[in-house]
Structure formats: structure tokens, C-alpha cells
Length: 412
Ligand code: C5P
Image 1 (cartoon, rainbow, N blue to C red):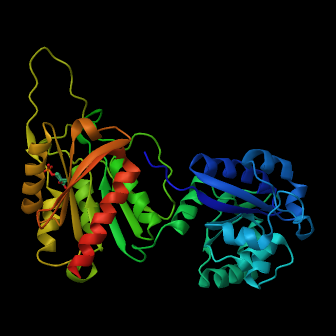
Image 2 (image 1 turned 180 degrees about the vertical axis):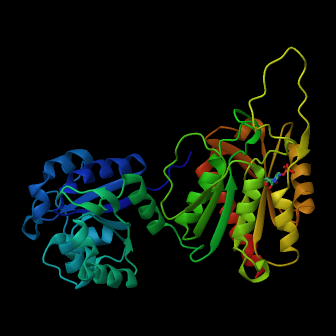
């Protein structure tokens, strides 16, 4: 298998008490296929030793202009050119201010000024320093120049205060790094995704559900975020607690009825004009629910128990009807089947028509349910069918959005 090119990250570490967290962050990124080169500010060295980063990354650490002539060292301009992305984490108020005003009296500031690569800044500081109008103005000015910021978390701060100022988690920072290096073909687009199973209550302790893990829809949501979209994820009960980017709006539901209300709400009052650009219904909605939900636990007895089931609303079909002949939303459905690929293809084609979808992704239950990988067929309106062999769901998500992009381009 061809290995993906490693992402080259210049990691700027500045003098915040959170500097030690940059070591974990460097490892986190390296595990996910990044090469990391660290540039430290002078005050960062008061909190963590350059040796820590040199040992972790296997690369020399840039510390001062005057050491650049040493063997193995790489000058600040070469570093700025080498980077696919420059990340400053943690970033102090001082570094943010200097970057906003174009200072370049340290290797890190010089890299920020010289690089043509995207820049991501993850601030960490005292809440009052973060909320100070000068810091906010500096952040705003940098954002206006295309610099991405990772909002710090709220909580207990090392300085004794409580509030916003804690360095964001590695997963959150890394999602922004990925977004920074991904072509933004969904920038400004609104994408709604449904995923996971639904649970249909029998009584207060029992329900009917299915084996869906929701992982395919989660991968789609993350991919859409990386491509620049504004993402809403409507999800049923998920296995595990995935680390989604905090900018993804999540709506947690339990039953099909709740999912229907949530999905229809995202269409807005006037779907003809305000519908999202793309909707992907990847949820495994239960087709039936008990006609009566008992408000008391049903008691065990020796007599057989019959539970009358009634059909659930078909959400995808309803959205397809609302869409009618409009271009928006570009509607993607899923079909899960048991059986062989031939049956899957004919069912995918049938569902594409029946639900007025623009694209239908077919997968077999044995390839997809509760797995990190999937194998899919993507059928588009013209009847084109594309087969994607077994791959991680993150890669399948990429291919699905590539096909969405091709199809939306040919529509406009
Ligand atoms: O008809 P079938 O359930 O196989 O269709 C699957 C597609 O329809 C999926 O995209 C699924 O999310 C959607 N669906 C739905 N509401 C239902 C059943 C399925 O939106 N009640």
C-alpha cells in the first residue's frame, strides 16, 4: 500500500505553564503521520527542556538565531519554507501580540513572518489576559490574515483563576492542523450528517435497536470539518466517546422520531432557500417501533409476549420529498444490505430513486457494522457506480466527499 506523505509541522512552544503539554502534543501528531520540528521561545525553556523535544521528535530544536550555524541546526527561513503548517502551542499573550504586530526578534516570530504555510495558534494563559481587549484585538487581526485559532478550554488555571485559558486538548488542536493542511473545498458550506442507531423504547428499561456504531457518520463529519464545512451531526447513542472537533455542532437523539425532528429542524422554515448545502443520512434508523411504550417495566410471565410494531418515519424519504427538484440539499443516503454485491448494487439504485437522493452509498452489514473499516459502492444519479475497496472509514469518508464534489460541480 502507498504510504501517505507525512505532514511537516513546525511546532512553536512559548513560555506558558502549559509548555509541558506540547511534548504530548508532538507525540500525538507524530503517531498520526507528522514530522515535527520544534522552535522554542527563550522563556519556554524555563518550563521544559529542549532535550525533551529533541529526544521525542528526533530533530534538533531551534532556540536562538545564534545557534543556527551549529551542525544539524536548520535556519529560521529554511524552517519556514519546510513547514506544511506552523502550529504555536501553547501560545502566550506576548507571542500573539508580537505576531500580530509583525515582530521577528526570535526564531519562532521570524518563522511566523516568513512562512507561506498556514498558521494555527493554540493560546494558553490567564483568563484575564486572554479576555483582555488588546489580546482579543490581536487575535482578531491575525484571524483576518487567515491565521486559525484553537479556542482554549475553560476550567481551573495554574494561576489560581477559573475561566477560559487552558490549552485545548491534543485531539482538538490536531483537528485544526488537519483542517489547515486540507484543501478547503467545503469552506462555508453547511453540512448535516445523521449517524448511529436509534433506540425505540419498549418500556423504561428495554428498547429495540441495531448494531450500528455510528463510526461511518463520525468519519464523514470529521472529514467535512477538515474540508472547511460548518457541520451539524445528529446522532443516536454511540459506542465510545469520540473526540470530535468542538466546532462540530452535535445533536444527540434517542428515537427515530427525535432524529426526524432534529433533521427537519436543520432544513429551516424555508428549505427552498435555506436548506443546508449537503445532507448525508448515514444513520441506521430503526424501521419499526413498539406501538405502545409501556410506562412501567413489563413483568415476566410464562405466557408469550407480543409486541405490536409500527413503522417509523422514513427521514431520508421525507427530506427527498421536501427537496423535490431543488438542487439543495445535495442529498446522500446509505443502504445496508446482507447478501452479495449484486444485490447491494440493485438495492442502492432502487433507494436512490425511491428517496430522491443524489447519491447512494451501499455497504454490506458484514463489511461495515461496528468496524473501523468499510467497503462501499457509491451510486450517483446518472447510474454511475464506483466501488471502493476495504479501507479505514476516514478514507471512505474522503472518497465519498470527493464524489459529492464531482457531482455538485457537474450540477452547477
Ligand atoms: O430504506 P432503508 O432503511 O434501507 O434506507 C436507508 C437509508 O434511509 C439510510 O440513508 C438511512 O439513514 C435512511 N433512513 C431514514 N429513516 C428511516 C430509515 C432509513 O432516514 N426510517
